Amino acid sequence: MSLNSRTLSECLQSGGAVHGQGIDTQALRRAAEGLKLAVFEVDCSRAKSKSAVLRAIANALDFPEHFGGNLDALYDSLCDAVLDQKVGMVLALRQLHQDDPGLAEHAPAIAQVGEDVVEFARENGKTFAFVLDRADGAAAPARPSSAS
Image (tube, rainbow, N blue to C red):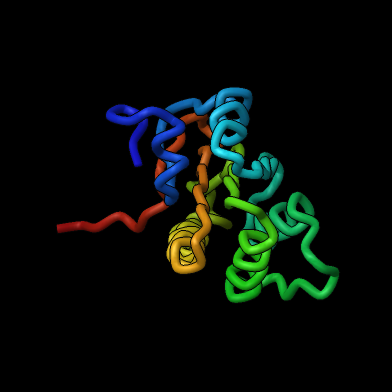
């Protein structure tokens, strides 16, 4: 969802990826609080690989020690985290180095896990929204580029 045409609260309420440049942490927290959504901020500034991003997420959300450290485990753990919330949650991956060589090929798959959790949340009467805040400061989707 783009912030150009909708308010942050509207984007969070509908769930899914929230796109907008420089989504402020305090504004995100206020909007989520108004919707009774838990907010998990993940500092990815030092994470330059898929495994480092997964560890950052696991640490921020206090995943169990047996967290598998792969995308299937990420999906399962995020689904459990969503179910643990009364209404739902927002996951903000801050300073994500999605264009760095060690992470570029994995960023779209991480974003896809987020989209899959959105569907799971909806099927279970919950809300899941996520922010992919690029390390260069512009929040944007991690999508594979398509050459025509």
